[in-house]
Length: 367
Image 1 (cartoon, one colour):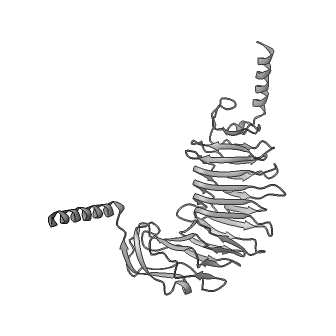
Image 2: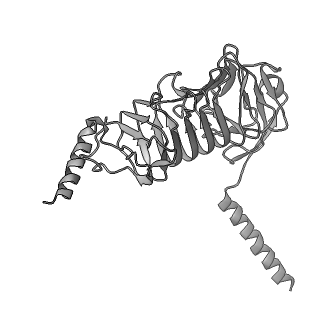
Image 3: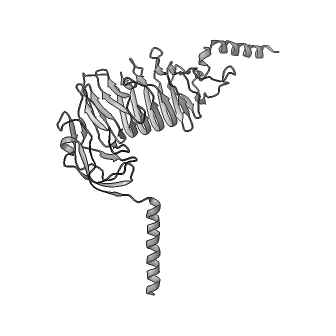
């Protein structure tokens, strides 16, 4: 056996020995490689990853170009750890990862990590983004789903110290579909985090929270805020519907838990712009149905609304509704004056085909 081969074997043995036993599953190679897939359980020592082993992501500690991507299903892991700096962990179409315990960023190791969901699904407990100096963390969702699975109102997203989150597509769910457990926090005085919301759906929010020092506004710039629970503003945070849509959900029995409220020092809910829609789900709406979607009173520090942007088409495109909006601006109450079902596309096509056939037959008879 030549010396070169012995040297390679020796180097590999030393490298394998440096890996913590719990870190077998994904570790960036620290060589700045872009586009490599770290999905192979035999990458280092031939041992398949087990449930409970950590997903450890390390950048190259030199530049911000390392991409670690996931494009297939992965076993559940106890936590997702991002350290050193410069890497993007990107979940692509076909990728699926559930980290059921704790997800965190190790701020003592430089940071500058991005979590990107571009298809596929990522489930984590929470993601508290912060930074110091040049350190910045960010989240980007363009398609697929990002689900936060925490069990208390303290779990969710926290953006501070210059951290940022960009939502342009897909679904970001801060809680289980049937309720809310997630806070959305923009906090920490003058060094607030930034939410760039231009598309996609945000669900499961428990509250939009500020820092009780600075007035801050969450502006919906083209996405959908889905409300199927009580969402409140807190600590000088406000919500502005902007150019987006806010959707209130109705339960199958016809009741709703979808309400807007304020907590201590909460800011205004401004629904005077964008679009307001109702999702009837499995409920069949009837004339006389009425819902109160806010516990607030109208005014500059409570609830701002307009009758002109309440959509007559239901959020699922199944119903056309004539709304009684006489109490909407003052009390957040919408009532149904008239409702008709929207024909299924196949039925519309059949009707059009029938009309076309009838017209053709009529013309032939006229000849």
